Image 1: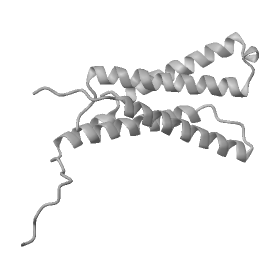
Image 2: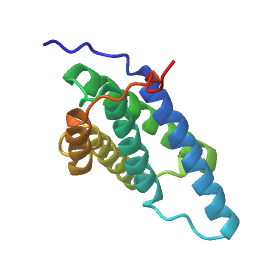
Image 3: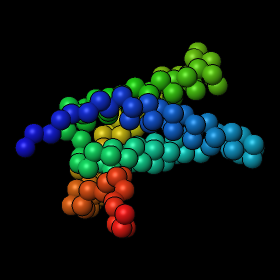
Image 4: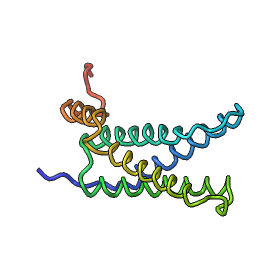
Length: 151
C-alpha cells in the first residue's frame, strides 16, 4: 500500500497565521498589563501551535507525516518563526543596540525553536504519537448521511 504525499503549504500557512496572531495577542496583553515580557512566552506559544497543527494534520490524513512532508513543514515553520522573531527585534530595538553576546542568545533560542518544531511534528512527541495511533486505528467516519429511516 502506497501513501500519497499531500501539499503541506496549508499547514505551514495555518501555523504562520496562528503563531503570529497568538504571539501578537500575548504581546499586547503583556504590554497592557505593564509587565516586562517573559522570555519563555514565545517558546510556549510555539510548542502549542506546532502541536495543534500536527494534530490537525494527523486528524485530516489519519497518519503521521511522511519524511518529505516532515522536512517541508518543519523548514517552513522554522522560516516563519525566524522571520517573525527578526521582525519583532527590528521593530522593537535598533539592530546597532544588539551586541554580539545577544546575537548568540538569539541564535541559541532560534535553534531551540527549530528543535521544538521538529519534535512537535515527529514521533518523538509522545502526545502526537499517541494521538496518531488512536486516530489511525479508529474507524473512518463518513460525512455522508446514512439512510436509516424508511422511505
